[in-house]
Image 1: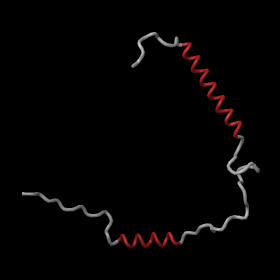
Image 2: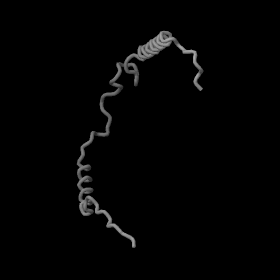
Image 3: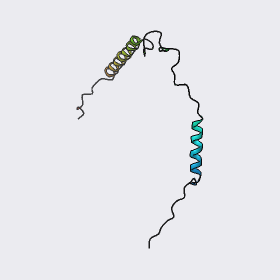
Length: 93
């Protein structure tokens, strides 16, 4: 004897689905968008004549990153030397 369970009923009655889809499509058609024509202002407003995409000072940014790298190397070396370095134990496999 096999026991059959009834199929679960959908949470939303199927009759409401077409009405919901129609409401969503009507709402989407009422959306107002900007005109596809380009604006009158030309150029990149983020930089003052340096060219497209160059915002700020790239050389200063590179120098700052190099400074951070040098400081982190110096701190690492100081930590290793102050803690005694290698303990002289067997090398890890």
